[in-house]
Amino acid sequence: MQLTINNTAVEIREGETILEAARRVGYTIPSLCYAPGARHKSSCMVCAVRNTANGQIIPSCTTYPTDGMQIDTENEEVKLVRTLSLELLLSDHKADCEAPCSMVCPKGLDVERMLAYYDTGEMEKAHLLIAAAFALPEVGCTDCKAPCEKACRRGSIDQAVAIREIIQDVIARSTETPGQEGQPIPKNDKNQYYSRLGRFTAKEKERLKETVTTPSRCLHCACAGRTDCKLRRYATAEGIKRPRYEASTALPVMEKQQISEHLWFEPAKCIRCGLCVYNSTNGFTFQDRGFGMQVVLPEANRSHIGDEFAALCPTGAIYLKENESWK
Ligand code: SF4
Ligand code: SF4
Ligand code: SF4
Ligand code: FES
Image: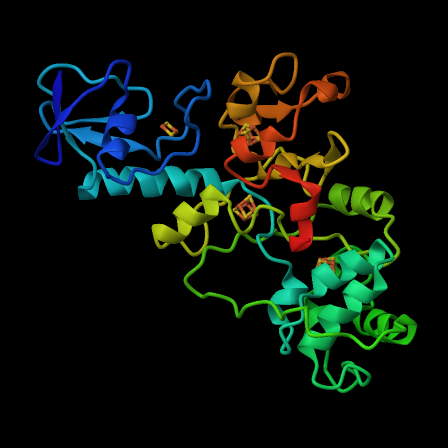
């Protein structure tokens, strides 16, 4: 069978969807709830295309070609549907792509990563980052007005992380002269999409105060998925800077659940695409319906989930620990 995609005739292979055929011949169509070879159901609509033969907008990831279809992958209407779908997904996405402290450091110190090393006792690695950011590491940032501490999320719960003191502590405890392996974080790309965590509710504040037990008291705000998150990438490509709609979310903010030695799950970053649910047996599952629907992983099911789910998840919701803080 033949299909017309953007006015070009395309021969369809057995069992191919419109998305697969279009990608095979070189068209770029975004997708979130689809992954090659994985079981999936349409839910996100970011793969929308238009059948100009009847004017319908259809999800290309689950639609099989039929005779007479003429597919347009790029018109304004299609782009509008994709942007709107992304904006709706982002409207109840309560998470930080980047850690606020790192974003405001005038020296470009990756504060969150340095604190991650501090919390695991890896002082030399923390020192390397400091040495890469400061011309005179032994002086640290004693003269700085510490915008990092003003931006610190922890400050909205009880007290900001004592970042400058910790930097001094790292410097004092480091015995070796650092090499130049650590790199300052790249300057913020203003064209990139930045998801930002809103304010904490009173309940969230109480919970976070109790659950964060790291030596620095840092919440580790940066998203482990920030360098390869498809949601962020597509939002950036569509020119979305901030979510247009504000929706309250029922998802537990900043709750991180350990699945196995390396694998973690953060429900607030889930877009309920279902990929993990449809591709695990006795693993992830949907809970509730409608706006309150969540993807959950009962404790008894954790052993059924392998590290490959990190690659399947289109966001930073399921992630490998080593990706946290770019370790
Ligand atoms: S809690 Fe940690 S990662 Fe978050 S802003 Fe404060 S110092 Fe940075
Ligand atoms: S999941 Fe993606 S969009 Fe959400 S905070 Fe992480 S990087 Fe940003
Ligand atoms: S955890 Fe990831 S794969 Fe699973 S439903 Fe959420 S976004 Fe999709
Ligand atoms: S990728 Fe097609 S509906 Fe989500």
